[in-house]
Length: 245
Ligand code: FPP
Image (cartoon, rainbow, N blue to C red; front, side, top):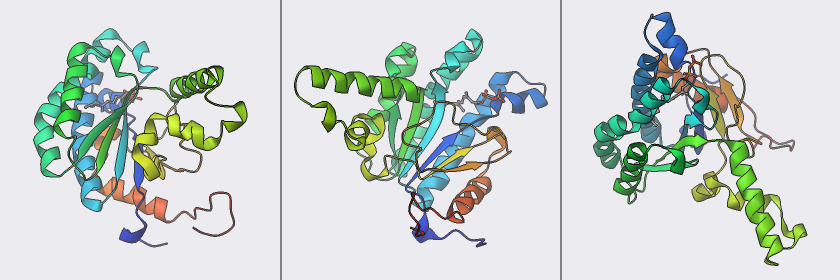
């Protein structure tokens, strides 16, 4: 086992399922929202570390299509976070040449949340360094349903034959197609000990390494992040073949 990160074999795209905010707060007899608040600060730390390392895309699962089932008060608080987060963080994102993007259906977000997200994307659109991609109101099945409906309508209009629907045409219609060669995450990290994908990047995860850590997201540090990347580097990716690529 190597114990140091090999800078030549870094993942291009790292995706994170930030889990455990509620449990972190509960353990401290705090309201769940205290966990989300601290979790927001962790995004800032990990973003800076990932950018310094030279990661190309960092995707964070901020809100899933299933999260609307949570208590209204909690949803309201989570939806207020982008305003606070970007107000403080956009100047640093600009300084670090980081570009903000999103995947998911933003149109269902409260107007103030949409405005904060749109402004952050616009303010960083010229940046050419790491992409910080927020999955907000994102669900992989919804994303795939939309792709299939679009391809179905192309077929109906005679623009596409059914046999022309390939893995490549499907991938080209996914929201992650905007990241080009780095569309699929090389590694998906999930914190808090849960071991499932929860409707996150299901198509894109076909060959992703999955790294699970028991650390709750509000406790997750840059050192934990490096440990996860080290675990990724110690796996032997074969993509279905026999050679270590
Ligand atoms: C999972 O923990 C966390 C979430 C569902 C919300 C994560 C959101 C943020 C950290 C902030 C988003 C910020 C921006 C800028 C968009 P959980 O509540 O499911 O934890 P539990 O499983 O312990 O209850």
